[in-house]
Image (cartoon, rainbow over all chains, first blue to last red; front, side):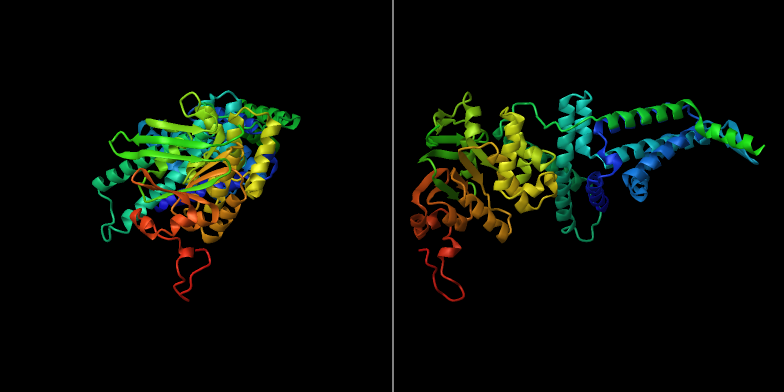
Length: 270
Length: 254
């Protein structure tokens, strides 16, 4: 449970980061959502053996993190936490694809290792992009931006509610877990039977709470649609930033900047 | 609406599992009155409150709020008139920020945006919570949550306030500021609670429920001095009316 507890505090930390006032924070959320989406599309659309051409994207992200004041350690911790998923996806590539496609000095590298690295790199880039998006925008503003961009309202509201009550749910789960832990003495592991009771209990409490929340909403005139205030303002500066980022991202996707730089460097040397 | 009367007549309610929670309750509350509903656990307080804002419709008997009898058709008007404050503020604060939550009701009423701004501001000032405006509700303390929950209801400008255990889970200071806040309201107030000391401070009239029936209905001080009645209904004299355990003297409230 220690893990869940720390994850809980990390979530609040993400919120704290989002209250910053840097250049990146001040941009319109819609710009940031669109740029992040473009970023992800560019990264995942690379060919499976590509590594070098993706590196400029990392540079792009690092720049934004620097401007937005997002601590790198925090992002790295989150990446490490989620990395097993990416590693599981790519781990068999080196076994399945043993064709040698690259020689680093005397060491031969198979296609499988290259594609595995490529997967891990993609994972790092996309997950970091999303973390940076939320850390500079705030979850609520991201939802609002998505809604403004045409996502059905019901999904936006669903996401907002999920985010609002995840804290209550975690606190509830923690209390139940502690209540079990202090009465189970030496028996440290939870057996299946206790676990099912605990989860079932949590579900029932959730349903009860859902009912009470619905009741509270009805009391204040809820009629099926949730209305939120509209505070998003789109300025010329936002448009400019979006254009620059868009051109930059598409350029980095289209041309292998790392390669071009390398060639330039070699030419200067020769 | 000139008179904000709450009238309940022979109200009965039986839950699907067969337990009769409310068995023929009748009372009439007039404009501006402040009434406490007290009783043991399971006496029917919560079920009664759920009828007052139209979450439950009467199975037997009638409920009249102001000029309307409570039916499916009038439920929307009644909810505008009656502001309900829940026991657990986490149930009531469901929006991402305090501002959004307070604006939720007025937005649903379809008010113009300047009016919403005014109402939200007034409600926040009234409950001393302007500084919490942009904060997410889950980061507030218990007392702050309660104050914001009251603000969300005030923003709807109800005539009648219905509260379920407003002083529960509050530290003494937060409880005191809540009592001061409520004492400043001129709404008709109906408060269900176990906090009998708060009742002494806030309500001139008390209704005692026992096993789904009205056991007593009258001036608060009179009821709290009836030791026999309190014992029968599993209640106790408020602490401030009991003798001091240290010096042995009784306070002047009796």
